[in-house]
Image (cartoon, rainbow, N blue to C red; front, top):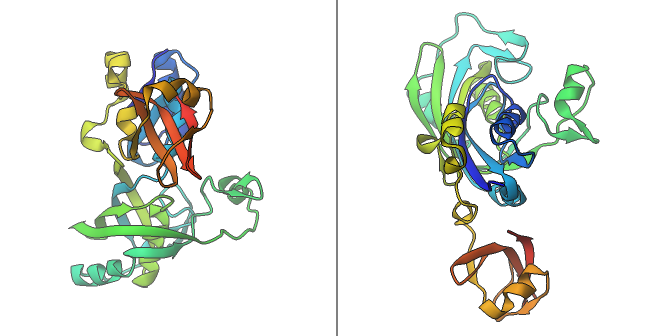
Length: 284
């Protein structure tokens, strides 16, 4: 079985789950998953795990992300993007100036509270929010803390602003578009979205489905190469079997929840240290 990650350039009009199924068919394997869901209308970087790499998807969940988002002013929808139904439309409004936009965007940089869209995959009492929203069920979305590292206007149109955004996990760009509109006293919605980066996965290196078909297993990135953000721990060779069997190894090191464990230059998996003992969390 082929094992590794694909830096996939997901096209718009396809769910992340659809993208996974497409890769399953290309490789004829069942074990395929993805990290960091992209909305169907969005395109760009979608890390896809094949084979044993699926064990390690969780270690990509906390990686920072970068986006290019075009926000449309004068229009608001119930979903925060153009896939939803229009709920507000402004006529003869004045487009915010660059200075006004820059001042508004500064208020979103840092740790902020955000309400995710009701049309999202977040679960409410065990049910996906978008299922409840489509059934017109009345419910409240819990607010969450997210982190915006940087926000920059890169282009202005007649009624649009294109932003580049660097943010932490769990940030909804649709919610950011809506909140920015509220800050400017204008209805606003997300017009288009491209994900530029997920950690070290970069759009400049991302592959199309045709690329994946053509390269086959040659397009797979090694599992350990995609976990370089985790601190490395060099395990003595004589403790390899113990680690692989889930047995503890006494170490003189501070506690750590996720370490990339290697021995003799070979990647073994991810481990954790607690109370002076190293144990395996996931093994290759």
